[in-house]
Amino acid sequence: MSEDHGVALIVGKTEKLRELSARLVKLDPGGSETRAAVAITLFLNDWKWTEAENEFKQALQLDPTCRMALTYYGYFLTDCGATRMPVTCLNARASSIQPRP
Image (cartoon, rainbow, N blue to C red; front, side, top):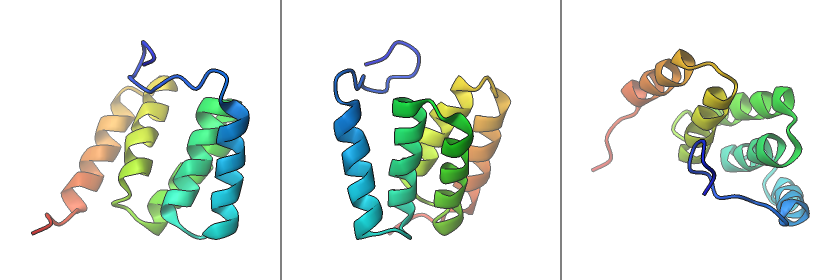
């Protein structure tokens, strides 16, 4: 686990992560989890933060309840130094989600 936010380290696995992300795009290009996976790859693997943020936003636009996008977007915002923004964003999302029976 990394020291800053508990995300498992991907040392030595960056190419595999990139391949899996590209494969997901082929299988389900419009899926929220696909967009979140692309965002995670861009964020953790490639350090392309502008592109990653755009992908996180697209994932959440497709599905505001996408857990993967919400979780990693929170990590992303924290790493960017936007300390209040993750809490605000996640609280807003949480209040809009209906509890599952």
